[in-house]
Picture 1 (cartoon, one colour):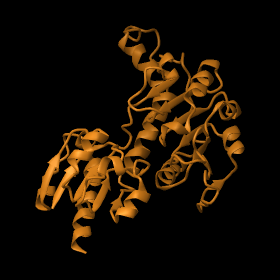
Picture 2: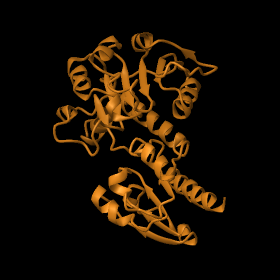
Picture 3: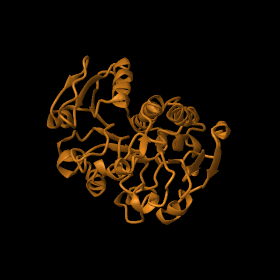
Length: 311
């Protein structure tokens, strides 16, 4: 068996993949273009990838290909009709990063809610040295106990965030982007109600026709001016120009993002204009990427390949 990793750098250099050698010949490429993938998959039985497009152009010459493994939950990069026509199966991985994405959600929230950048700067600028008071009240913050937390997309990650938020004393409400998802224990509301009543709004939904551009100018205008917005779903769910304008106009207090419409960040991204870290924090799509989550991910992929060829 020949296993080809088309973009192994997306997993990280610190994850041990030596176990895959037990399955057969393993070839790793840091990154692959569509044209490079066409050549590199020519004699592959299995390909492992994250972002590479899988279609006739990239795997049309792969005559031995039997299985495509995506090191992610989303599979928008797969031409599933073409794979089905070729009789090539595919696998993705769900649930591997639930804990770490939930953790990062709260990391972004607390950074913004408790004005941590401001207070860290205050101390490191040495204004606290020899200050007249033992504490400093200039940039007030609030406790989340008693706040309303609105969640867009109550799947595995959204549900975990909801459980933790509830433990902190939040009233949790949610909006089902498909209109079909009902979760016991939490109050389902319409989109406008969620926007208007939430002190915190976090997005944990996949990118679909229902969510593309969901958070736009009209949505931000309906939110409380004191609200914090968090996107841990997919970048294109947010109209970034509208979000930038809403932050600059004071339509909402702050935003924390781990995903962008174009990644890596494009030069013309309107959010680049906002340099105030008390108002906006962006992390480079790392919420899923704890060592534990990435290790778990690759163990699952290993088992998928092993089980596929055992049957």
